Image (cartoon, rainbow, N blue to C red; front, side, top):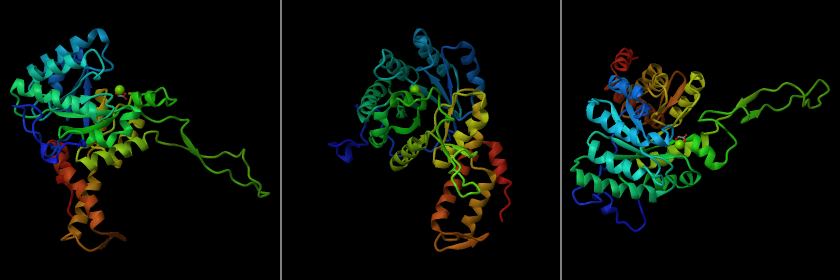
Length: 361
Ligand code: GLV
Ligand code: MG
C-alpha cells in the first residue's frame, strides 16, 4: 500500500466506471503457464486444441518475439482470443516492458479488444511500486472506457536487482496484484551474475566436502571429495514466496531453458513447489506435464495429510502418528496440501480419481 493513501481508498476503482477491485485474489489452479508466440501461425493454430489441457495459456508479446513481429504478435493474440472459447483455461498475456516502444499500444489495443477474456497481464522487468501504479491507473481507465465489469489482474516478473530489493512494495502496490514470477535470465544479467543460461543450476556453484585425513592423521587435500551443486535461485525464490504470502498473492518459478533436460527441469520446479510456489512457466508442451505433476500434491502426501487431519480432531493438542509428533502446526501444513488437492481435483478429473482412491486410514 502506498504511503499517503488511506487504507479506505485502496479498494476504490482508479477511474470512474472501472470495475471494483477484488479484495481477495482467487486461488485458480495455475500449475503451468504455457507461453506461446501469437505471431507464430503454426503455434497459434494449436492454441484452441490446448484449451483444457493446461491451466494457463499465455500469449507472449515480449522477449522471444522479434521486434519485427511485435505488431503481428499483438494482433495475433487479439484474433486468437476473439475466436477461442477458453472454458476453464485462463488466458494471460505478457506485455512488453514499460520503457519499450510497444507497451502502451499493447495495453490500449488488448484491453478494449479482448479485456473481457484476459485474466492476467504479466508485466516484465518491474522495478518498484511505481511501475504497478502506472499500469493500475491505465488499466482502470481502459476498463472503464471498454465497459468491463471484472478487473484484469496484474502479475509482475521479478527480474531486476531493484525489483528484488523492492519485492514487498511491488506485491502490495495494487489490489490487482495476482502474483510474481522469477525471471532468472534477465535477473542474472541485471545482477551481473556470471551465468549464460535461462534458469536452472550451474555446475560451478557448489559446496565441497571437507578434506579427509590420511593414515598419518594429516589432512589430504588431494583426496577425492564429493561436491554438491547448489541452487542459484534459492534466495530470490524464498524472498518472493515470503513477499507473496504476506500480501495474499501467488509466487511462481519461471522459465527453464534447457528443454531437453527434463530431469533437472523437474528438480527446479519441485524446489519451487516445496518452497511455496504454486506454478511455473512452460516453454514447450513437454514442460506442461512436468509442471502439472510437480505442482499437484502427490497421492502419498494427500493421504498422509488427510490422516493427520483425521487424527487431530478439533485441531488442538498433539498426537503421535508412526512415531512422529503432530500438532496444530503440522496440521496447518497438511491442510495446505488438502486444500490444494481439492482445488486441483475440481478441474483435473485424473487427479480427482487418484485422490478419491486414497483409502482413509
Ligand atoms: C524471463 O523473462 C527471464 O528473463 O528469465
Ligand atoms: Mg525476462
